[in-house]
Length: 587
Image 1 (cartoon, rainbow, N blue to C red):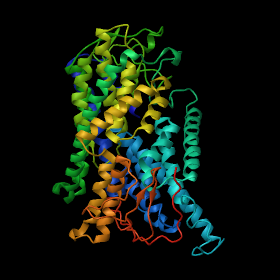
Image 2 (cartoon, one colour):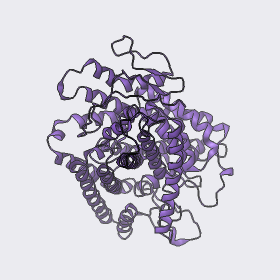
Image 3 (cartoon, rainbow, N blue to C red):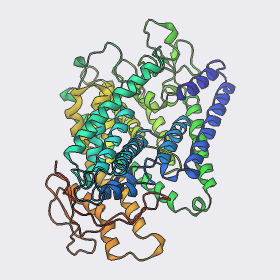
Image 4 (cartoon, rainbow, N blue to C red):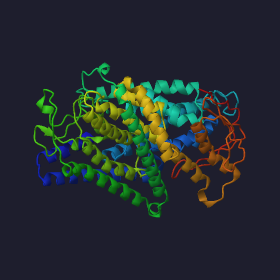
């Protein structure tokens, strides 16, 4: 759908190189963006409100509680957040939101969708067992009561890993992301490892097989982010020791940028949740994001005309592909002619009119393509505000790919600059783009191993693991000095605190402890401590300990999060003290 829309806009401009052609293309793109965003927002606002945004903060809170409950209670806890209606709406609304041209990603929502399918499978299994009366549900020997890791928890983890893997074509990245970012605070079991491992691998194989069967002419490629040209050997690519200093400077820069982006994103989320004009009417939420999509589409369409630079098209022996080499066809990059002559293409249009994945493909490329730093800087100046404007809106939206694109731009700028001064001594600018993408995403999410694994999988280049780990660590450190917490966990803490104080009543001591649980857990993990966690008042707290392996231990008498809401209209039934629950297995 997106490729069809972008192709039409490209044809409109190519057939009329005057300002009229650009205006018509902008009108077409803006109209498509406005309509698609409005339809997506209507589906979310009026049918399934929990389907908005990425759903990851709500998922983290849910899993932190579900792991400590018996299976039937865990199912009830996630009934509104993960039910089939929410999953179905999120699938179609996410498709429309991506088609609208908003500066968003699909990977975060894909995790929510996958987790929803895992919850649905768990519900079917548990209902079937109880229906056939294998044992009484209240029986302590019930096979589904309090087992290793919990059936619901395990299947939700496996589903989330499958969603991430299918979106990124990164099975290891999906498994590690669920471990590091989503499920670790609630405990990680051996069964969760096995389940996520199988689910992630199966998701990649199934999606690729379905695409090959549906499009036998190979008009659609599964690899949405393509890094290397055909025939390129990974052995000839990599990094040099002379890149160390520029890469470290890149890591510091990405840390500052990702820290600022985190702060601005959290501010936008807070504003959208508290703005009176948005609370008054759901239609205003629809109008708001529709106008954002309209503005984003128009800006990305006219930006190449405002900053007109033309570059020779790389020849590949096939003149038919010189004007537009689609990234969705045979794993090649898209060169957009725009208003340039037939033998040239527009680097700016090749960033703004190919989608986020297509732009990343260009920036990660290890070929001879040149991207002037000025073009990349101008692109960032317009792209980042569009990304922040979409944060917390009433459509399914992720932040992974936008942050990868920002980091790739910063890395490509650094790579182009150092190669202009030390040509022949430094690695290709694409290497800097890949490392910068990892550094920016790591600084934004504060994830480490999952980001490195994902970058290696989508690039196919394992030689950059060491520099990526070092640069990402530096970026994460710098970002933590700019903004204390990462984007997702910042939203988690706000969600827990807001729900503890909902309806304007003064929270009880139990609710205070519960609202501090994930916050204190995150702080303890940040500083690597296994000592008793302090309470907000400074007195000792019995909330639990973080084991030396990072898993959560909590006694039966400790407070519950199950009284909290996991979404704008999600009402969670009161939880009960878990009985007979085994401690989550340490890693």
